[in-house]
Length: 449
Image 1 (cartoon, rainbow, N blue to C red):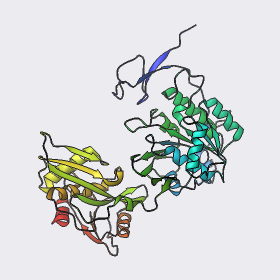
Image 2 (cartoon, rainbow, N blue to C red):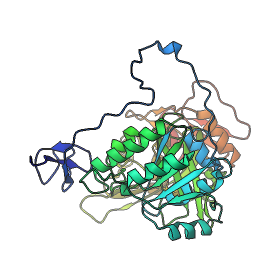
Image 3 (cartoon, rainbow, N blue to C red):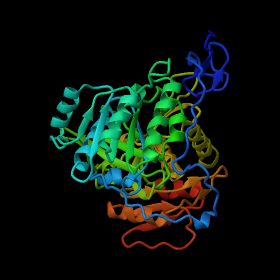
Image 4 (cartoon, rainbow, N blue to C red):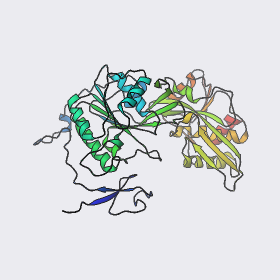
């Protein structure tokens, strides 16, 4: 009998290697190669594949009016694009203890009155899930519960119950019996998810997969799961704090970049109606603090950027950022030296976004630069001031999209003056004084005199 062939697969990037090595040749990460027995890939037809079917023009394909299933959690519906699309597979990732299982169990409890729900628990026993449901108010008493890790047994129950919504917690614990590799390996994840996907696409049901993340914050698997599913949701935030952010990084049925804001309470996760107020400090102006407005999907979100600049006690000045891109921050500090006349070579600079938010929007670059200048001069910005704009390498302040929506949100929260780049068309908002800044020196003069 021929000896089965095996290959080494990187658990970080999924690259195949013919033999063992200390690091992956593709992603250059160490100790990530896992041995797996090779098997012939199984052929699976798509949901529309029928023997003898011929091609037709795209314009001749009838359009179906898909009715979404609302979860009863407005912030979750926002991130999903309006609700759950029938026949979709959704991946929910995040750090351990961030609230993935809590949110999905709450969703199951609110869905049980309008659809049949099956909760597949691969990590917790039935009694443990029941205790968590009781802590959340006992709303999920009619949800079907299956403590199982074998994908064959899960599929058998899916055929018997035909639920409309399925939650698999977590996909790393599910495995196929005909594979020799351990649960959580690349082969098991790919084949188990493919089996569930084949069932999903042949029905009008939807499946939520809970996925673990690596220490770098990426979904373990590696990216194979993200390519297979329809929607990818990431939980962000510190599990030691009460606020959580749910962000859509992929959505075939809605906009990406949408963010849902939740607060962790004793009764579970509760959506926050006015998230901008959470990230702003209600106190007198302080040096090193500047507010900005970031677009998170279709929602303007006001945040506070804090900076601390002090003389360094090391041979190399420190540059530490939290919630901001470190390389882009280095460029902003160089612009502040070149065009602002401030010498930062002998100063440590620490930058942070208050509330644990990760800011990817370039519209906050002007606020971050003004916060550093304010800390360096030990002079606070005038009360009620907000700064919005992207900085170019020539020191110019570039316009950002959705500027009027950002300013309206700022006015609703009590801001009275805004520093912005020149907009494509004039903007006038009652009660808000708008100062046009073409470049960084002009913004520094207006903000700090």
